[in-house]
Amino acid sequence: MTDNTQTRTEPAVSTETGIIVGFRVDDVDHFLGVPYAEPPIGANRFRRPQAPRPWETPRAATRLGHPSVQTNPDYPAWLDPGKESEDCLFLNVWTPNSAAGAKRPVLVWIHGGAYQYGSAGAPIYDGQKLARSQDVVVVSINHRLNAFGYLWFGDIFPELAGHGNLGQRDLIAALGWVRDNISSFGGDSANITLFGESGGGAKIGALLNTEAAAGLFHRVIIQSGSQTCLLERQEATEVAQRFLKVLGVDSVEELQAADVESLKRATQAVENDLGVLAFQPVIDETLMSRQPWSESQPLGAVGLPMMIGMTRDESRGFIPEACKLGRSVADEVRDFFGSASLTDAEIADLIARYRCLTEHSADEELAWELTSDIWMRRSLLHLLDLRQASGGPNPTYVYEFRWRTPAFGSLWALHASELPFVFGNLAYPTAWDGVDTDASRAAADPGEQRYLLRDEMMAAWGAFARSGDPSTDRLSWPQYGKSKSTMIFQTGGSVIVQHPDQDRDSAIRHIRPGW
Image (cartoon, rainbow, N blue to C red; front, side, top):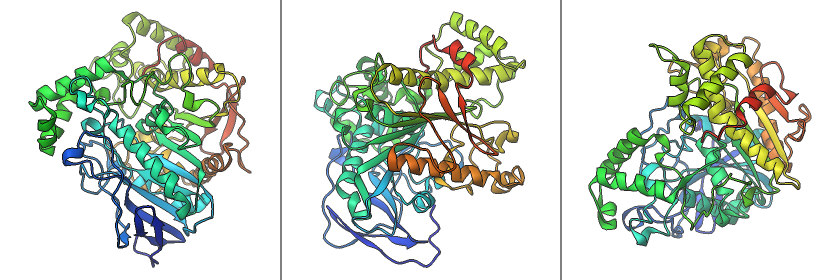
């Protein structure tokens, strides 16, 4: 949450739908909870977003908008303290002294949480420090999630065939708002960079595959979110059929009349049955007509500057007790998110290869290495291979994040552990193991190296937003290219490495991407 206890002024900005009044803290103007579409409730439930109605008197924009309805099991750093609601189509803007005509680069944040939960209002995502330090405009977006935003009813209820992929349509509506209004906040509508992590990065990948999003952004940063395959219509229809059966309805009218708690219970039941990716974008042949990263990169990615990367130990926070209670490495790999496409023979072959390739002799270490690589590294390599194979200029910058959070005993660079550094928010609630604190982070870093890493990463993200090249005065960052140049973000100073982990890459390149 933003600290609003300091002396504030009340900046006002005129948007296409009316004047909004925010507040200023430390020379950064905050405009929170700005509606970019009508509430998707009543007759608008399970239908594409509608343009917001204008207002006549100035509207206060001083509180975060509602997060989407969800059941979020995460730790406090990732939890929006606001009340969840179907009325969730809001965005937030942080800008250094919002002066029209300033033409600052715009960074638009799309939050993670798969497609199931999460919110732009999580404490770690506050955009004030990033906006101030990099002299950029930061925007974050809430949108519909889980069953409310990612159910495909078009082959069950024909009248909803043009209303699929609602979460993605919400993002497109928000980006349209940014294009039309951001100049009033000092932003450059011709210089918009999307950045997102995990499910947020995957949503960006799907937007690259969407003609309706063309021209709404000019660069992308995909952080641990290189999803390669979305649901086909038949798969998505089966999910919707199961949802309707659990809910006990068989008409659009009953869907729109159902109470929110019943919809939440049905959502949870389907996720428990089918997994967290039961709800995700679908190739509906209306908004999207092909898989985004199949034989070639999506048209929206061609020539677009891209920064893409992952953390060193993506899976370890999800299975910290790997291979306990008699479970084998094969069990852990087979059951882990992203491994369902692998046969038992492929899993056995990978285990044998990794026993030779890595320094780990313990089964749990091997399980962590394999699940991280199958889930995230393989899909990242797939995107990079397609970028290079397409020919022409495809400016691509790759990173791996290796700072070890004090969570779980300072052993790992966990999924999402780069985010406090990107946003500059190094003081935050517990995020990974339920017990990590600001004090434990300070104790693990007596030399305060984490602040140097924060400055390096914020500057790189800001440089990329300005020019499409993340190089800074401190860090020279070449394109990925034939040498597979990779920026290693780490304690003690970040460095470029040529083709890190080449043997592991060779071992997994032949298998199908994990998600």
